[in-house]
Length: 251
Ligand code: PGA
Image (cartoon, rainbow, N blue to C red; front, side):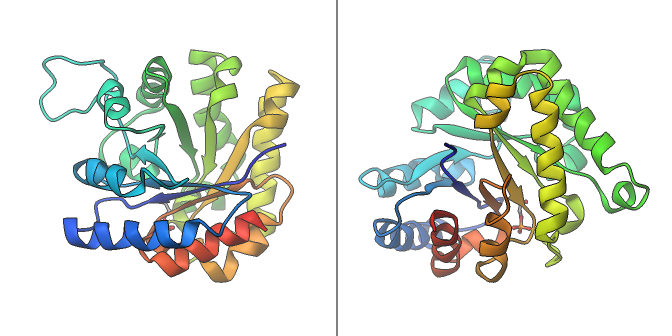
């Protein structure tokens, strides 16, 4: 039985004031949602503020990235140990914005995944193809490479405590969503890839969809057999919209 997960990826957005208002609004509404796990991934600088605001609620806390080392002379970096100390349970690794803009290669993503688990964090591994890759029919090859690089590095057993998010790059922040059928096709393929290593782990693995999810399309996406929730960017910055997405996952 896979409990749906809806994670808000706030990216590099917010001020102390706006983030506090958003977190308060979410705490106020989350109490009436059962049957889905809700997670917030604020920018590092707001993590402690958000942690104190959600501490009495059922909402979980995650970060958007981590560095591979546990600590030491790495100017500007944040370790998994620091995230755990700040109250995080999850961390996103391999988001396409980091892959494209910050140079996170498949190998670096695998090391970040491993580093997260070394500290007891649950990694949310993002995979996804660009528009060019989809148009040249290489979607499943790209996703297979991104996923198997991590599986080869850490072993399929590690996915007992991990989440995978399929985020087509062409659908992120563009308003263009994969159709439920397009998303389901990739989710089913991902589960099948995992099943070649372990049927049990594949059956229990939560697969999130991300890319322009909003209240208006969430229910259709979440009704698909292999879609177990969402990783939400823009729509997670508005309490009412995000809560409606969470309610769709819980239904
Ligand atoms: P979006 O972003 O919902 O704004 O498309 C999703 C993501 O990048 O995680």
